[in-house]
Length: 190
Image (cartoon, rainbow, N blue to C red; front, side, top):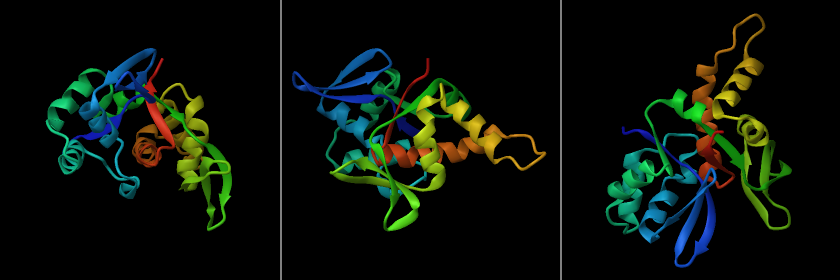
């Protein structure tokens, strides 16, 4: 299995024949193929909280007819538009999450789930309690690592020291779900 991939940036729409993606205060303009690779880096909703790897991105790009996916992926990583995560702790310390959509309350078909979407237009996703907690509070955290520290503190058994490293795997899984469903995006911290 190859390294896990996360897209970085907020989509800003089409501008003068290219696609704009904002990372921090910088705007990047992507041609059609590079944008396609960036979109594929988001993952597929049916992956759930599982890993989405370089191999997965390349395979999906090949299926979509995007040429030179590996070259585009490397260029996107060099530009900071994709994170190829070899060191999850460093990744969590240098990136933050922001949310898209609004909370719609408990999902009628799954009362333990929390619906997010657009009022009047519908539900984008139904989140489990852990995923919803990250969606609800992750955007106020300065980094993903801070979210790991908070989750570790809240979930630690009485008298047990919090373990943010253990929470990191859970947070990255929740993040994968949120990103692949279009409920959140990643940006650089700071």
